[in-house]
Amino acid sequence: MDYQELYNQNKERLIKGRYIALHHLEPVLLRLQNEGKVSVLGRSVLGKPIYVYQNGKGNIRVMMWSQMHGNESTTTKAVLDFFNFLDSEKGEEFKQRFTFCIIPMLNPDGAEKWTRTNANDVDLNRDSQNLTQPESQILRKCIEDFKPDLCFNLHDQRTIFGVEGTQNPATVSFLAPSYNEAKEVNDVRKKAMEVIAYMNETLQKYIPNQIGRYDDSFNINCIGDTVQQIGIPTVLIEAGHYPSDYQRENTRKLVFTALVSGLYNFKLKCIFDEKYLEYFNIPHNLAFFFDFLYKNVKFNYDNKQIITNFAVQFSERVENEEMAFDAFISKVGDLPGVCGHFEFDAKGEKYSDNENNFPNIGQKADFFIGNQKFLNGKPLTIGEE
Ligand SMILES: [Zn+2]
Image 1 (cartoon, rainbow, N blue to C red):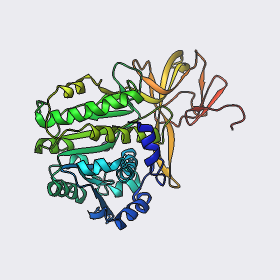
Image 2 (tube, rainbow, N blue to C red):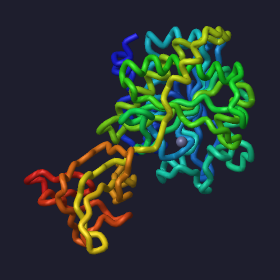
Image 3 (cartoon, helix red, strand yellow):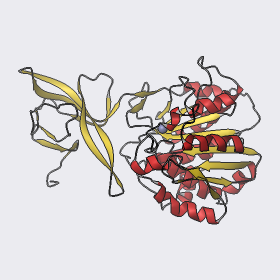
Image 4 (cartoon, rainbow, N blue to C red):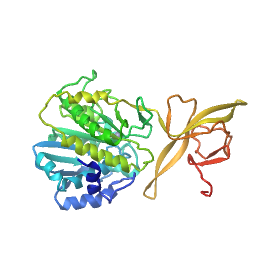
């Protein structure tokens, strides 16, 4: 299958960028509501509708939920592309095989304010046992009513993650969550691993060695672990950083590709052809990236001149309906094993700034190295000021 072409044909062009709140989705969702594919499941803490999309008439029941963390929008974009795919000619086969139940935005209050948590400041992915929040209750009831054969739990991960044993970002990471402390593998979890093995096989062609395997420590308060324990194979997808793609439009395409290829290869009846073992060949997802890394920089420290490294990390903020990225000094020192999405070798040139000529943690990343000016972490080229 030509996934690039498939994506181009089905990309939902009304939706783009990082900041995706419910009002961005609603033009699309209301059109689908008129077509009878979308309805309202319930309301968030602040009374926003939580929409559900249903389509297909196959005997394999697939459920997905996205943006349970409000500031994780990449998979939501991919899910909207997937809706278009289902109504395309190629999607017909999928609608014959599967019945879909998809919640594109579980946490609309968090999305609006661009927070991980909901309006009560609760992390919905730690509320799957206590079910204290309306969003958690809505999701749980939907799972119980729909009775899926397979679930996709869709998230974003920060730019800090890379692939173990490489210097590559983890552009997509996967997890077949554990269902007990011992992290045992039963037929349910094997099935989730098998789906991931197929998705990984496809994605490796597009982003070789940029795929990670998420930590599988058991936490029953996480929704994936809970659903896996109930006995429904559950796959976690974490959309991550692709070089220079802070809007995550390329990652969006890769998540769409993962969803289509995982389902295309899905077999309901367990055929234990050892495919699932490929899951364990995916390297671990590890936190060793910063957005910026400046190496071999000279400072005055304790009245001595030293040459060392420092790292800068973006913090996200919504401004005029767009995502703004503010760069702050994050770490100073040798930083062994650390990579930067942007790296600069100062070759011993001196650091200076308008404060005390030292990169203090938390300070805005506006400084000079030698004669080169950096603004918001980035080198200014002549004439750019
Ligand atoms: Zn998340």
